[in-house]
Length: 191
Ligand SMILES: [Zn+2]
Image 1 (cartoon, rainbow, N blue to C red):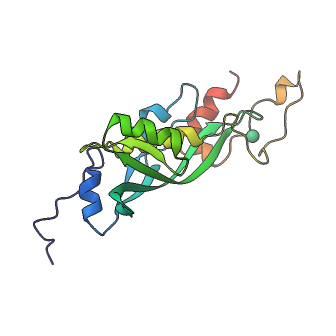
Image 2: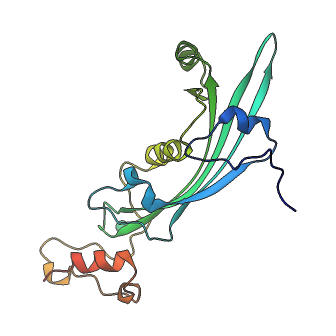
């Protein structure tokens, strides 16, 4: 059955949060991690073409006694970001499953006041065109560990001076041409 003509598809790059609150359903989608350019750091593993951020958003107007209802956006994010392990220097997968609640203020002044007095929410100024992916990318960046490390490194640590054993054994993964880690592994091998 065709969707009602009154419901336009939501554009996550220009999200109207108030319009989303008027709907009962959740908005959801995915975006390739390669498109989140600020996640890319020089020297860090390049995301696989298939790697994506899964997002889910819903908005609501919460009744407030004696005042205007509050507009909230609830955002769920799922992504696996790769970074270089600071112990063994191999790529480490960092699964990020985040849930964030944003409270929208009508004005800059209101946002500043709420920001100071409320610790139950991140406060944003309401816009008709919120870039949800930019917001999601901010949250992913904030959630990444400062010092990424494997819980248990896959390879034994190298003793200083044992340079001859430094080359990682080519794994079966590394022989697949389309795997960015394969390229990385090649780059790290001494010539
Ligand atoms: Zn490691």
